[in-house]
Image 1 (cartoon, rainbow, N blue to C red):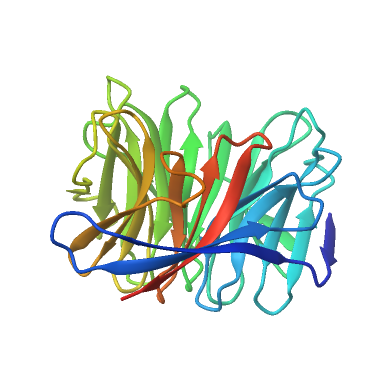
Image 2: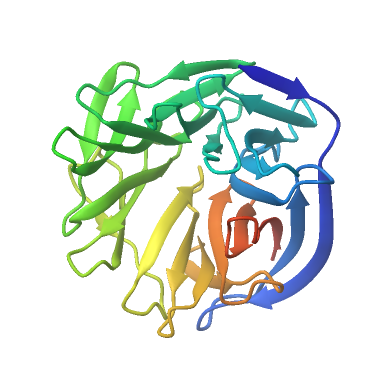
Length: 302
């Protein structure tokens, strides 16, 4: 394991746009590109906590991917694992969620090709073991340390999961036949879950009772591909990604009972809304990925 902390972390390109759906009150979003290091080929931003620490990953100038935390107690934290060695042809390690204490959730692909979910705190990885799972991805984490994510069972079926202490709950939303993924969890235990139906289109839900009931989440203006729900904050605000009728990708913020569609001005039609904190600071990505993606942070103003 390697953990390096240096004062790097560059925020570029400040742009303001006002967006909304239907008659929702106007919100203004100020976008900033996020660059992990001056020589990073790509920076992916997935989670953000109340101190604006951003969890994600970056690809260095040699094409190697590293997990990272930008901000918080340390300006920049890079995290690598010796059993998950990234190379230009196999670059899979990232943090996806981060709680108020700076504990991150994420996953990596080890040297045997197995995906391992983990918590990460102060330079230490704690792996998440699910009996019978062939892969595990940890994605969301709340302040109590409850983790959500996805795993594939011994029959090759993917499920969402909630892990509270040693208690595992499987999360399988109705109508989802593949790609079931639990992405976010807030301090009240409300979980965001999405997956694909038999036509390969996204279905999204929230569940407040550990998967006993599911409430559908749709975005006005979404096309047949649907919406992939992501983070929920402690105020019940939600950030997600939806596809319009032309299959273009946009972010959406659900706040105050209203839906606000948004695009980074440099990534109209290719914007993903992924992370959200209680102050309505958002993170996500635009572009194609594989060195063509750009992470962003956006501040929301009434």
